[in-house]
Length: 384
Ligand SMILES: Cc1cc2nc3c(=O)[nH]c(=O)nc-3n(C[C@H](O)[C@H](O)[C@H](O)COP(=O)(O)OP(=O)(O)OC[C@H]3O[C@@H](n4cnc5c(N)ncnc54)[C@H](O)[C@@H]3O)c2cc1C
Image 1 (cartoon, rainbow, N blue to C red):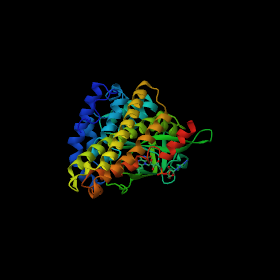
Image 2: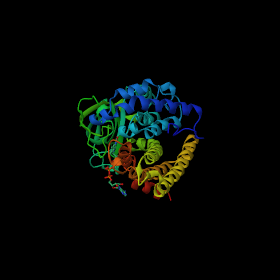
Image 3: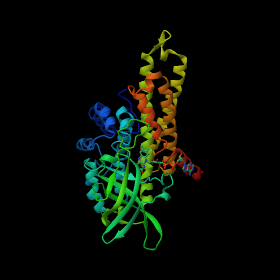
């Protein structure tokens, strides 16, 4: 099982070495502690700093900004390794500051890159994108949070929901409405430090799964941030800046989903081979072998889709529509695989003592965040 993820043509030896380090980090720093963090509802900020010290964060950010100077595949290995670890499922969003770092790298000013990227690469900075609100999820036009210019600052009022890693965030990349100089309403994205006066964070919302992902509400009450915290120092680009980086977010969800499928299959084969019923193992039933054979075949197809997509990402020929197709296919498959795999565990699969229950519950969110399956179908449909 330790070989999951290795031996793929798309990766070079330096990618495999990075994966090896990442996997060791999950085994040593995360797996033994997850139970306690699930009780707390979130994992400690120190985990980001440990990952930063181990050189595991912002692998794809240029070295001059504190990153490891790697490529998009390094970035995606971090997400895949969340999928190859049961602890990764419990972390929910996990060690994913590199997505917000990508927004700065893609859309930030030179000064913002120098100020924020080393902060994220070290693990001192923990960031998430704040788009969703009580009245705005799939339809971002419903955003009510509002920013207005006041001298050298912006003043922000509003509310965000479901902010991953809420209790440990140091900054939230907050997307707000804004009135442009010509009177039109548009959007903007701000780096809002969580210790700013007027920011409050709720306790994590209880989720379907026992998670340590900290999904929280965040409230802004006359929160003042300097104008240089407006990403790109340009108004009217908030949604566009988020969309520019969302392709990567969708691929990250897809690669994580397929990795989780591979782990689920491996765990299920082990379990079925060890569990006896009617004088044979559960694995010996033809039904088990047929169903798991189908699962294995579908995973192999998804793996081929993922690796071909990664190769095209590296070449720069992968589009937003491609990422919608990949996320749709891989996360829908994940739902089916987790359901089949849980079934072969019987009652054990429904218990928190066995990892498959956590993986099953976590898989469900993949079809909802970073674009629901319906929104992805809409994007793909429009392209036809
Ligand atoms: C654990 C967790 C962590 C999260 N982390 C974050 C985070 O860090 N930052 C953040 O900004 N958000 C986060 N979210 C929020 C998530 O991104 C949203 O839940 C998601 O975008 C869907 O929005 P919604 O929940 O408002 O659903 P809605 O938009 O209300 O959708 C409800 C249903 O209607 C369907 N629907 C909507 N529009 C259409 C359409 N045009 N055609 C067909 N069907 C449609 C949807 O697909 C869905 O099935 C998180 C959510 C969870 C549960």
